[in-house]
Amino acid sequence: MQRTTHFRTGAILFLLPALLLFTAFFLYPVGYVVVVSFMKWDGMSSPGFVGLRNYSALFHDEVFRISIRNNLIWACAEAMIQVPLAILVALLLARKPKGWKLLRTIYFFPHVISGIAITMLWGAIYNNERGLLNGFLRLIGLSEWEHNWLGGLGSAFPSVLVYGLLYIGYFMVIILADISSVSQSYYEAASIDGATRTQQDWHITLPLIRGTIATCVTLAMVNGLRQFEQVLLLTGGGPANNTSVLVLYLYKELQNFHYGTANALGTVLIVLGGLVILTVRKLFNAAKYDM
Image 1 (tube, rainbow, N blue to C red):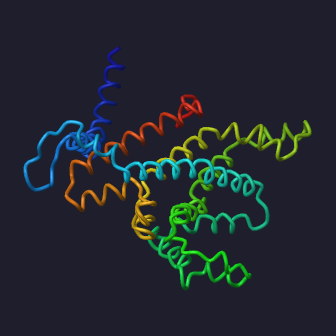
Image 2 (image 1 turned 180 degrees about the horizontal axis):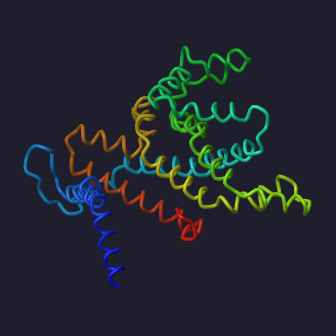
Image 3 (image 1 turned 90 degrees about the vertical axis):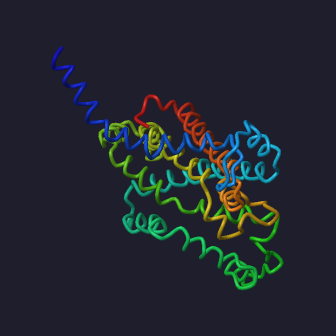
C-alpha cells in the first residue's frame, strides 16, 4: 500500500511540470480566446461584453459561410484523396521495388522545402501570362483551355486546393514505417495459403495499420482546417472572397482591429478541430488503438 502511494506521488510530481506548461501555453490561451470572443474589443479601448453577438454576426456573414465551406472541402479532400494516395504509394514502396529508397526520398523532398517557397512556385505555374500551365496547354495545341486560373471564380479555389493534395510524402513515410513493423510471419502464412500480394495488403496490411491511417486522416483534416499561407500568397482570399478560409478571415479581422470577431473565429476553429478528432475516432473505432 505504501509502495503504491509512493508510486502515485512520484507520478504526479513527474507529470506536474508538463501539466503546468500545458496549462500556461494551451489551456490559458484557449480560455482567453473563448472569453474575448464574447466581447467587443478593438485591442486598445476597454473590452465590452456583448454575449453571442459576435457569433450571430459571423453566422449571418457570407464570407464566414464561404470560408467554413472551403475549409470543410479542404479537410475532406485531404482525408479522402491525399491519405489514400499516400497509402497506395506506401504499399507499393513496401514491396521494395528497384530504387524504392530514391522514390521515398523524392516523395518526401517537398516537405523539407518551405511551404512559402512551394506556394510561390505554384503561383508562377498558374501565372496567367507567363505561367508554365498555360504555356504547356499552348504547346500541346489546347490554347483554348488557357485560363486565368487564380482569377476565375470557378477555377481559383480548385487551383489553390489541388496542388497541396499532390504532396503526400509526410503521410507516406508514417504509413510506410508502420507497414515495416508488421510481422513477416503473417505474409508467409498467407503465401502458403495462396494469397496474392494484393489480397495480403487488403486482408493483412490495411487492418493492421488501421490506427495509423486514423491518425493520418485526423492530421490531414486538421491541416485542412488551418490553411492560411497557401491562400494568402496565391489569391489573398479572392476573387470576391471565393477562396477565403477561416484562418485568413481571422487574420483580416485582426488587421481591422475586430478582436472580438477574430477570437470568435478562433473559437469556431477550436470546436471544428475537436469535432474532427471525435468524428475520426468514431469512424475508425479508434478506442482500440493508441491514437
